[in-house]
Amino acid sequence: MTLMLTAITAFGGLVFGLVLGLLKTFPHSKIANAIGALYTYVFRGTPLLLQIFIFYFGLPILGFDTSPLQSVSIALVAYSSAYIGEILRGSIQSIDKGQWEASASLAFTYWQQMRRVILPQAFKISIPPLVGFLVSIIKGTSLTSIVGYIELTKSGTIVLQATYQPFLVYAIVCLFYFALCYPLSLLGSRLERRFIPSA
Amino acid sequence: MGYKLRFADVLRYQHMMLPGLVATMRLSCMSFLLGVAVGIVGGYLKTSDKPVARRIAVAYVEFIRNTPALIQLYLVFFGLTSFGVWLDPSAAAVLTLGINCGAYATEIVRSGIEAVGKGQKEAGFSLGMSRYQVFRYVILFPTIKTVFPSLGNQFILTMLGTSVVSQIAVPELTYAASIIESRTFRSFEVYLLIAALYLALASVFAVAFWLIEKAFLDKSLRLPGRRTGRVVNTVDTGLLPQ
Image 1 (cartoon, rainbow over the protein chains, first blue to last red):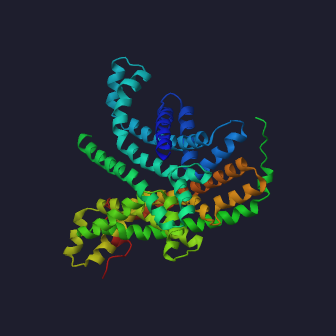
Image 2: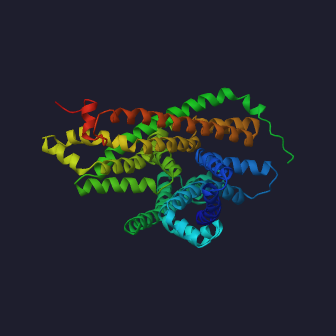
Image 3: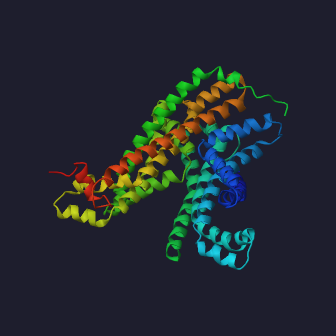
């Protein structure tokens, strides 16, 4: 469950984060930049728990008949796309201006430049911080247990109510998360080190 | 949309939100201070010459950073009861959030310490300072100056993280939100309002930290000539030991 939620969040976050990143770096429209900046500001400046509450309780009220999984996924995707958008914006802006000029001199349109020249490089640069953020996503899924969604944390609580051994149960849950996240962290730092000589 | 947003019902409970706000602020500040203290110790350990010290610090940081804050909270509040330790919710909250913040602060401080050139440390030793003196007078101040923005950011993250402790009934802002929600059943309005409050808080603190940083930075640049403001800083603020 946790893994599925993580996967949904990761993919959704990447898609929307990409949209957001492109919005924020679009040179021809200050409005697009502003929309992207506002979205990032709102979703990074509020706690994830509250965002989950708002989407989980709010979406049915607004008339959308969503399952718990859907509401919770939407909340997590919204949150992660803000951060991923920021990461991608940073990597897009760090691409050497020469790339833009070279592709412009080859008569690429903006979107062609983006798709064929800039984004592939930006993605490569952004992989280490994205892996790091994946760890945050995994930790974020634990908050969904509060609205009753059954994933690792919640199943721990359920087991606890049967066994009455809080330390043992939560320690094991902790170890599970650690086993999920630590390899990713190591991977992330190794990737980061690999990029320094190649930059 | 057949639902009418009615904020009036929620605003009637403002008297509950203010204490929640104050409690959140107190919680964040105490946790952050604890976290910075732990972070300085951790940063010192991580950059020490002894591998044992380094490994302890690394284990601590990796454990905290790769496990969710909620689980850490449950572990402290519920888990310690297995050993007979019953903690007050607020105490457990400050302890957990402080330790959590401390791990991130350790990384921040470590990067700051490494940014202070080795030459500074060696210069300190050559002047006959003990290791503690070198750390306190030569390394610590430039480190804090360098990492101040990151620490400010960490404060805001910690403040947003306090919403999680509402789960063990610590009377802070998110907890106030759930109380109001259970009385008015206007979950959407309540949580939107409280989220806006958090956003406002985060913005205020972001500006505050920026202002403090401006005040800080300008101070060291007032000395003529040297722009790096390293060992020169300690002369400026009178920290050099006699």
